[in-house]
Each structure stands twice: as C-alpha cells, then as structure tokens.
Image (cartoon, rainbow, N blue to C red; front, side, top):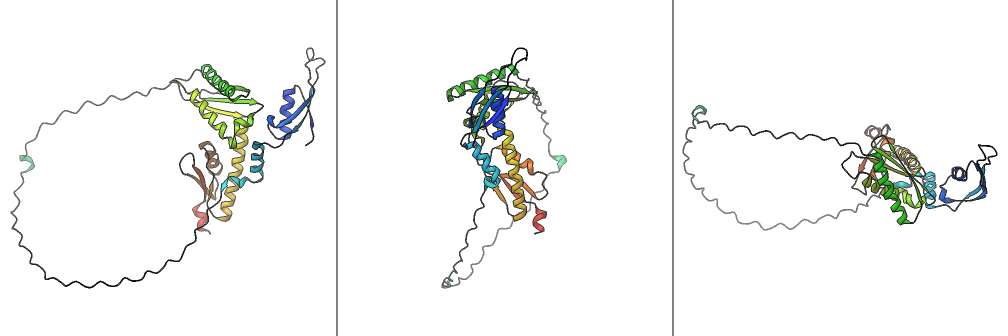
Length: 307
C-alpha cells in the first residue's frame, strides 16, 4: 500500500487521523514525519504537523475484524450431522421352557379372631398439658448500606496495579481512569502495542478487566463496575456481534433450523440476547456451563406451526 499524507495540529493527532483513514490501530501503521509543526507565538506563525503513513501487513486483530466483516457467520457452530440409523436385527424367539408340574394348593391356616378395638376417650376427657410459652423471636438483622468508595483512592490503586502489570509485560501504556457516576469506572488504555492487550477476540482484555475489577473492589465500600477498553475495541466488537445476531436470525428464519453459536462470555451473550429480544421470528437462550456456555437461536413456535 502507498503512503498517504496526513496533516493535523500535532504529530499525535496526525497519527490518529491516519489510523482512522487506514481503518486500523496505531500499532499496525508505518509513518514518517515530514513536518513536526509548531504552535508559534500566541498562535502567530503556527505550522501544521505533516506525516506520511501506510498500513503494515495485516495483524491478527485486523484479520479477525475483516474475517467477521466478510463472513459474519464464522462464529456460528456448524450443526452436527444426523447419525445414520442402522436397521435393527430381529431377535429370534427363545425356545419355550418345559412347563413345571402344578402343585396342589395348600390349605390356608385359619387366621386368629381379632378382638374388637377398645373405645377411645373423648377429646374432653384427655388431660390437657400446659402450653409452653412462645420462644422469643430472633432479632431482625439490619441491612447496612455500604458507603460509596473514595474515587481518588480507587483510581490510584487501579493505576498502580496496571502500571506494575504493564511494566512486567515490557510495554508502555498510557492509562486514563475516570469515574462515571459513583459506581462505574471507565479505564482507557493507549499505546503502540494494543494488539497484545486485546488478544484473540478480546479474551486478554476481558481477563485484564476482571483482575482490575478485583483490585478496584478491595475494601467494604459499594461495588464498582470496571470497564476496560483500548482503541475503541468494545464498540467495534459490539457492532460485530450485533451484525452476527441479525445474520443468524435470518438464517434460522430461512432454514427453520436451530443454530448454536460459539462459547462466549456473559457480556457478549447479553449483546446477542439484546439484539434479538424483539425479533418476531426467533428466540434466544443460553446452554452449557462456564466457560463453554453458548447462545442458541431457535425459531419461534408460531413460525414452526406455519411450516
């Protein structure tokens, strides 16, 4: 691919614009700086930054999105072939056994005569026992509402954990942690090797998010939901899964056959369920145990009856 020329206020802005035009991440482009640019004096004499960039050989992340874009059905699990039914062999009748000689019935022993039951005393005649006093009721446990977390303390703890982790991995990552309300922490990561952090279909990023959530929720404060993202991967993955859901629904409606998707984490399964919850032709449910739990798309009953 030939180089494209991009102009922006700074070199970083130019690199970001180049990734958008080339449709890839920053770690998958090659660029050279033509003009670094300058701000000038109070805006006078400022110059724009100019770079030339081109796309590297396709990475595993780009190949994955390109594969799903061209063939969104690649996440669907192929239906198992029906087993061939072998004709059953007819069982030969067993030879009849020789009949045993019939024995003469024995005379039954005479049963002893039962005595008539003794009359039971009337209810009024039964002596009443003193009723025990009711036990004291157990005290009702008070529900203690946990206080909100100290936001600055949580951000510092999470940032320290991530910096140590990335240092051990040998990569440089810029961390931007911001609270959304009192119970959601958005953590955005930026760097030159984000493909390593994303992993195959976001599995490495999901694992990092889980560990970060454990660190953020240390202590007795209210639960904090952690969202870890890089290079807008979560939004792109969500769009990919929604397109997959629509294509699978169309296939089920056309073939009237159930489709099993590949195992997904709870977040991705919710995206599929949400995308098809109002579909008039198909319904969804999950089967299996974690981490192999998968979404199943089936035709609704009213559609089956019209078949």
